[in-house]
Length: 217
Image 1 (cartoon, helix red, strand yellow):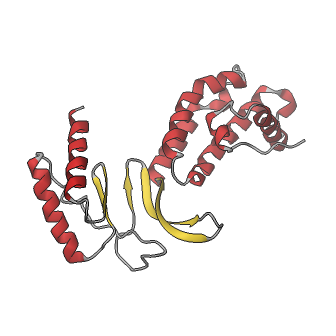
Image 2: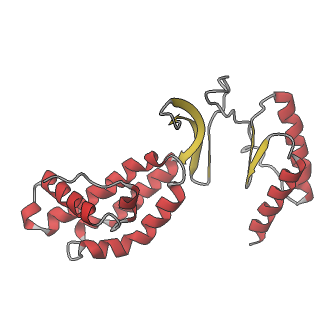
Image 3: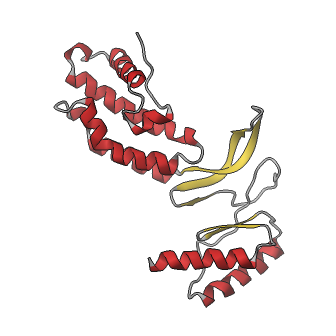
């Protein structure tokens, strides 16, 4: 609670101080889209003075300039990406409302967070839970899945597709062990799972995002 109030104070101070400078402030990360180096040095000095009044300081090694490269800012800079709170901010290909592609500086789940999610899915050992029904699996894992989808599904949802495809494969292996008619038949097990997803699209939290296995007949 103490740290949360400190960050809230930091956001308010920076927003009031730099309201006319074109700066976006999110917790302890500050984006400045005007990348003049002299202006950055001045800005860093002012922020350090402000933080010192709150008994906070910038980390000497982690504080760096990041160039928010996109279709409008095409310059070169040593740092054009960074990770923060499980998200990776970097230039990515996006599509506008007219289906035109452009480069946007945006966030998606970071590689470190994605690796941790995959490791968690493997640790569940779903394929060994043949004594459970698919509804039981839904009740067991949905609280975690909802947390992942609610947090990481806010930006660039397609970055979650490979992770939840791994989860669908784990469910497929579970079905192959549980039902004799599916044993040794990967395609049939995957299509069986897909038909359940069509009938019950809300059974698993990631299915609600449309990340469902293909249904074959």
